[in-house]
Each structure stands twice: as structure tokens, then as C-alpha cells.
Length: 301
Image (cartoon, rainbow, N blue to C red; front, side):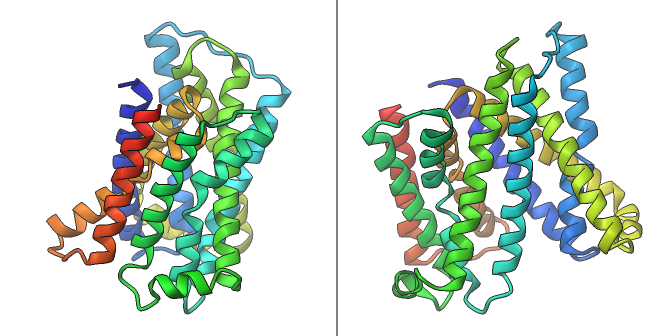
């Protein structure tokens, strides 16, 4: 089994932990501030990754060209837009539908891989991606009164449109990060991923800082008071992102994002083991589809 598979699974596991920690933070600060923590407190760790690879493992630091920064800005902005679209979706009564459609990210990433990078996926890979996406969409509506029928009938609703747009932005971001890392050309996938992460998280931190200063200055005091848990969020988030960037340097973004759907299974396992929640039939069916899609993905890959 190729190394990108193990890296992706590890990144998905860490992202699940980061998400749980961020939910804990939202009890003491606003959503924007909790989102900023992921970037701002992750920045020092991204710098440590680059420093360790350079001084500890003798990797030379690549000198980026203009194209690199273009991809970083595109990826950073679209990721922020995607996140805000998700927050916008939560304002709707039937937000579950929008969330489900946002999960089409891997399928959309496959399209943008063709458009931006000329990377075509085999038919078997596309089928595997589709299976896992359907499984995740099933799980997204499993614990609501929405149901599969509403998911299908709401395809042209404003909520679904916002969800699809969020998936589009996330898909573009994933492909942009892969393009940025590949544009460095050397000295190896670890340093390429680390430099891409450092540049991206620096840009996102600056954007979020400017927004907080402009619109939500009171959040700075809340961030300061929760600096310990924020530091943990930053460390886990930066490590997870380093995993994503490394995996996407080695493999097509759509394939990595499809395998990353395993995070949903980690979330379900957490709810069962720690919160003693029961899994319903739709969640069971969705989990089975995700597993089938992942196994198919690994087989055809």
C-alpha cells in the first residue's frame, strides 16, 4: 500500500480531533474566532515543520515562482469562502441538505483536476469516488427528518446551491494546493508540502486577522483567554493540513479527498464509543458505501 494512503488516514483522524476541539472552543468564542484559531495558532507549527526539514533533515528550501503564490492565494481564498458558505448554510432550517451537498467535494475536485492540471482519473476511480460521496451524503441526512427523498427533491433549492458551491470551493482549494506544491518541483514531497502549508496558512492568518480587527475586535480577548486549547487546535490542525498537503503532492486531489471520507467513519466511531449513541440504518448504509468506495479506490489505484 502506497504511503499517501497512510498519510491521508492519519490526517483524517487528526482532523476529526481538531473538529471536536474547535466545537469546544465555540463555547467561549464566536465562529469566526474559532476558525481563526485553526490558522493563527497553526502558523508557528507550520514554521517548525519547514525548519525541522531544513535544519534537521538537510532539505533545501525551494525558491517559489510567481505561479506558486497564485495557486496559494487561490487555494487559501477558496477554502475561506467554502468555510463561510458552510456557516451560511447553517442559517437555513433545512441546513442538513446543504451540508450533504457540500460533501460532493471529491467529485468536483476530479473535474477541477482535469480543468486546471489536465489530470484524468480512470473510470474505476471515478466510480469509487461516486460511491463514497453517496455514502457520505446518506450519513449527512441520517439523523434528521430530511431523509433521502427531501435530499433529492431539494436539489434546486437555495440551500442545495450553497452546499454545492461550498463543495466547489473546497474542490478548487484542494486542486490549487496540489498545483502549488507541484510547482515547487523539488526537493521532495515533504518539503514541498511544508512550504506550501507555511505559505497558505500565513496568507489565511493575515486575512482572518484583518477581518477580526475590522469586524470583531472583541474576539481577541476571548482568543487570548483560551490560548491553551487554541494552541492544541493549532498544532493538531497544522499537522493534519501537513498530512493533506503531503498526500496531495503524491496523489491526485480527488483521490485523496475521496479516501479522506474515512473521517466520517471516525466521527461515527467516536459517537458510538464515547457518547454511547446508536447508529441507525441510513448511517449503516452510508458507512457501508464509504467503505466500499474506499476499498474500490485502493483496488483500482
